[in-house]
Image 1 (cartoon, rainbow, N blue to C red):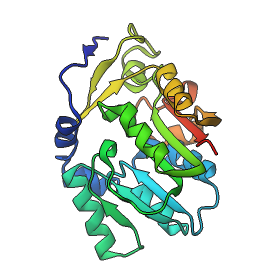
Image 2: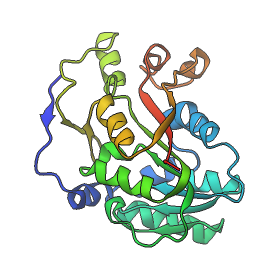
Image 3: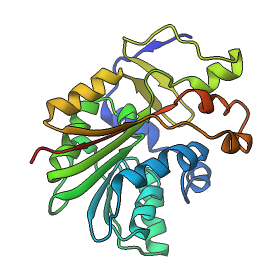
Image 4: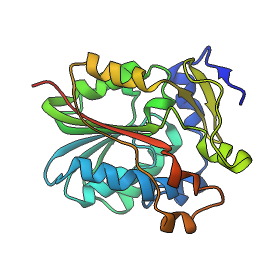
Length: 248
């Protein structure tokens, strides 16, 4: 597998790229995300967050707002932050059409404006890999929390982030690069590979206490209804989900 070294990227450039996502793609995932989010990410996120009734929740990098809407439907008071123009506009349009009390703010996660009182929980789902200054984004999420507040983030599992394409090609997972940071081009933007230790050590350095790490796997029954090659997710985890508490 060839790996392009990540160079010359800024948050602004990444935001511009992701912010041009076509509306067809946004509509297709507007209810509860794509296949992987429905079966692997959402159930774990909702379990880790627990009862969010009347709790202030920051959806950091909320994209088209699907998770914000799910959380609001469970009684949370949600603020969704999204810098990408097309994603932000789509989320606002959905809120205008069917109000749930969600406040959407267009901003770079590394330069958050005043969002009001500290949050009970913050979620950054599939966001940090897309941010060049990911340490700044993580720092901002943690700082937005009240003492003891819960921070949950999800990323493509750094050990298996090319799982689907490798499995379809070889019938197994193969990689030849892990320790270096590199770009992973996608149809709408670019993600950046970082190691598991990079994410966890940054979190620990911010004074957070890890409470759970999840590597969800797909059930054979769900895989049978999925796209070609998705059976790889039964055997290896494509996502890493981390929960931690801000220091009290």
